Image (cartoon, rainbow, N blue to C red; front, side):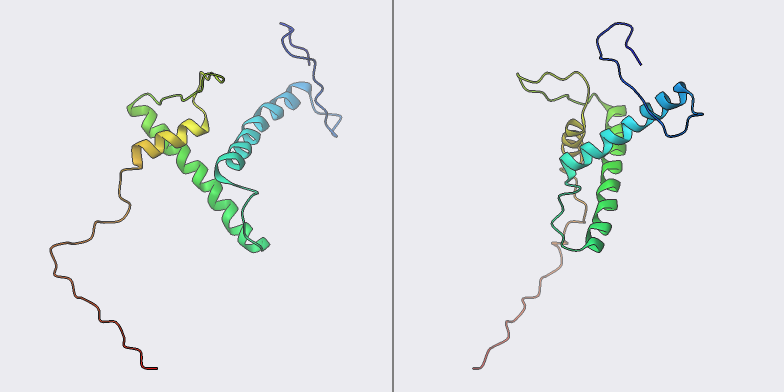
Length: 137
């Protein structure tokens, strides 16, 4: 495949199936790109593949949860975007024009970070002081 504008180098797309059309192969590549970006962002920001568990079973439990967290952050960001513009954070040496996952994380934190996920303790009820067990040695 060649870029008619000449901005990108020619690239070859290969398949083990000789009957696949070039348009199908290009379509597969385009669909695959969003998956690759998702895995790169989940690795970079949520720690997939860098978990500190020691067993394969523990990693098998946490990886789907981290991918689910990625999905939730994406959905929360979409809701925030419907209500207001999401700030694109950039540095002087790295100008960005589109929202990235790090911007989405910051937007979710800004929006939901002040929300309590558990109810506040009831301060109207009198508290009972617990007695420490006496130790007899």
